Image (cartoon, rainbow, N blue to C red; front, side, top):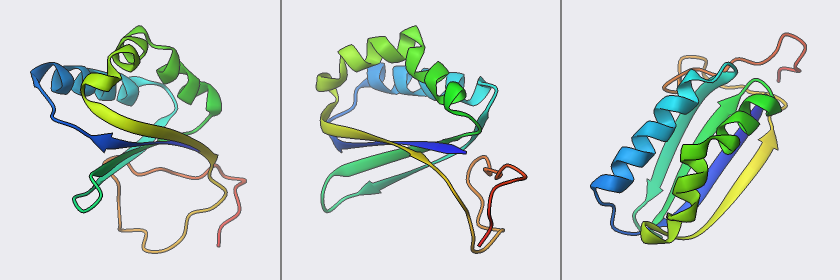
Length: 114
């Protein structure tokens, strides 16, 4: 499993931002290999984070290659400040199994469990 985490400084969002953001999120959820998502906001630092979980790197790459995603990246400085993206391979998940995401990620059968 892979995760992609987008961390950025929040600015003011307008209607166009919300429309684009909602469209990209809806398209991401339709990708075969999408497993789940979560987000957070730190009011003290102004940072916002969005984490998506994917069964394969190819599924993640499909999101990155979408035209609507590339368009939004070109306009990012209108809505966000500095940002970074972290792509990671998830090796294990443990803890409370009832603590679900909006879509619960599942580890592959051969993945180690803690």
